[in-house]
Amino acid sequence: MRIGRLEENPIITTNHVKPSRPDFKVVGVFNAGVAAINDEIVLLLRVAEMPVHVPGNSIAVPVLNEQDRTLEIKYLNKNDPRYNYEDSRVVKEQGRYAYLTSMSHLRVARSKDGVRFVIDEYPSLFPIDAEEAWGIEDPRITQLGNRYYITYSAVSPKGVAVRLAVTEDFRNFERLGLILPPENKDVAIFPGKIEGKYFMLHRPVPKSIGSPEMWIAESPDLMHWGNHRFLIGLREQSWDNGRIGGGAVPFLTKDGWLELYHGADVNDRYCMGAVLLDREDPGKVLARSRVPVLMPETDYEMNGFFGGVVFSCGALLMDQTVRMYYGAADEVMACADLSLADIYRTF
Ligand code: MAN
Image 1 (tube, rainbow, N blue to C red):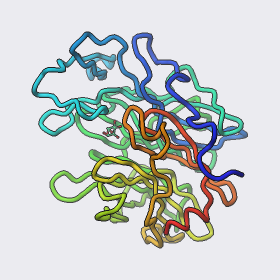
Image 2 (tube, helix red, strand yellow; image 1 turned 135 degrees about the vertical axis):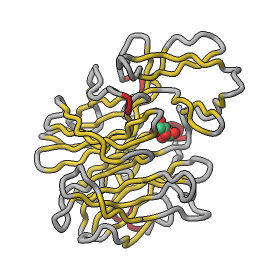
Image 3 (spheres, rainbow, N blue to C red; image 1 turned 180 degrees about the vertical axis):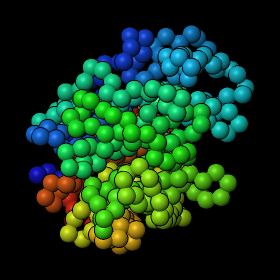
C-alpha cells in the first residue's frame, strides 16, 4: 500500500453534492465521520450550504426559525459598521460570533473501496430545533456492537453544544439528546468500555480563564458524563499553540489508544497530530507528536472556503496503516494513508 495522500484527492468536492433546496448551493463538504458497516465504508459528511441569490452589497445568512422550525434567510448589509466579515466562516460583532455564513447538515456517502463514494441526495440529519438553529457539524462515529453512535456539534445563538444520535443502518437515525452544554465540541467516544466505563474526549472553550484544550470524561450509559479530567493543552511556540481538540475516534493499538487530534496555531493553521493514551486508563498520556502527522500543503488544503486546514473526524485502522479521512480547507474531503511507524516517529 502506498503511504501518504491518496492520488484521487480530493475524493469528494462540492460539485458531487446535491443542495438540500433549489435556492441553496453547497459551499463545503468536509469533516466527515467514518464507519465500516457490512462491506461498505460510510462517511457522514458535513455539508455546508449558502443561499444562491444574494442581493448586491449584502451577505445572506441561513438560520432556522426557532418558532416554526423553517429555514429563514437573513440579509446583512456588507457596509454595516457593526459587522466584521474578515473570517469567511463567521460574521463577527464586537469580536463575538453574530452569525455563521453557512449552515451545515449531515449526509451519508457510501463506498465499496473507500475512495469512490455514492452520496445520498438528501440530508440524513438536518437542523431541527432551537439548539441547532445555526447548523449541525463535525460528526464522529463510534461503533458499539451493531449500533453506531454519532456525536456532533449543535450550533445556535446559545453556543456550540454536543449532541448524540444513534443508527444501526445509516438510514434511520434517532436523536438521543444533549450530552454537553456550550461551549464544547470535538467529542469522540472510545469504541468500547474500559474497566466497565465509557470514555470520551471533549474540548471545552473557557471564555474568561483558560484555553480550548482537550479533556476526558467517563460515563456509565453514554448520556451522563462525569469524572472530567484535563488531558492535553496548548504548547507555546508549537504548531498547536492556538487551539486543540479531538479528531478521529481513538482506536486501540498494541501500545495503547491512538488519538489523531487537530491542533491550530494562533494564525488558524490547522494540522493533525497524534497522542497515545494508556490502554487501561486513557486519562494517562504516554506520548504526543512533536511535529504534525499531517499539515496543510497541497492546493486543496491551502486554498478553499477557509484555507490552511486539515481536520479529521474519523480514521480506520487497517493492520499497520491508518486510513485517515479529513476535511481540507473547510471545503472538500480528502484521505491519507499513514503508517503507524510514521505516526510513532512524530513522538
Ligand atoms: C468555527 C469553525 C466553523 C464552525 C464554527 C461553529 O468557527 O469550526 O466551521 O461553523 O466554529 O462551530
